[in-house]
Length: 339
Ligand SMILES: [Zn+2]
Image: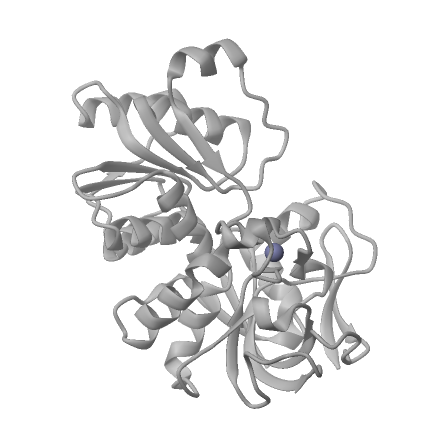
């Protein structure tokens, strides 16, 4: 089968990879209907994470081709969506809603879903079947549920977004934009998007942003304070993962406010004394997307949300290298790869 392999920073190739087969009775093999490139795939692309002929990709939708003997919740032929973290969905951590930290977790990045087929461990716990075969135009939105929508949703929940709340969103890439969509669905009164790209601002407004702040860092924080009677936002979504974005998020929250942080932290260190006096709640990490998947799939199926709008470039899998370049150069927000 064909699959994306990263050999080093900036070196993405589409190569022959071994087609996966069932190795445990709890596995399934799916034939991908679509896959995509994640903002987090840019960390190794830019040399921030190590790679060595690493299969890439952790987002996926597709049709179940084969199941192990123990798999009961999905059948061959089902159209399925799964999280970027495979989980049993039965352990105590899963039962508490933290499937991304399942005691048997398997990061799907290790499988590499930018490929024609993917092995899905813990198929019963990981995969959620859609109510039927989706119309083609729903596939991008279902694919978004696999990671970026679920991650934006978790960020909003972690930030305790709700009716009457003012929400600030740090980061205008796919997760931040879908955090806006989540905040809107969760009933936020005001949603302030932070970012300066005109096309992303337009999408932010379409997803429910009521205000745009173009400044970043301390100047951005000042603007948030101006918009909130000097108090700061009730809820802040952090979707970048750098020192600057994290401090911008914490400083944008009011005392007693909540920050949901889902940008993968890279060299972030928090000043203890400042954290102490901030009285801000912090909650984040790899999103337990599986917790939200059934509800998100239904919202998409009923055409109540359109998270697939974050894909602004679609390429065949064979042109994955161009997709990485486009995202790296910020010519594309998020790239969908067709098969
Ligand atoms: Zn578990």
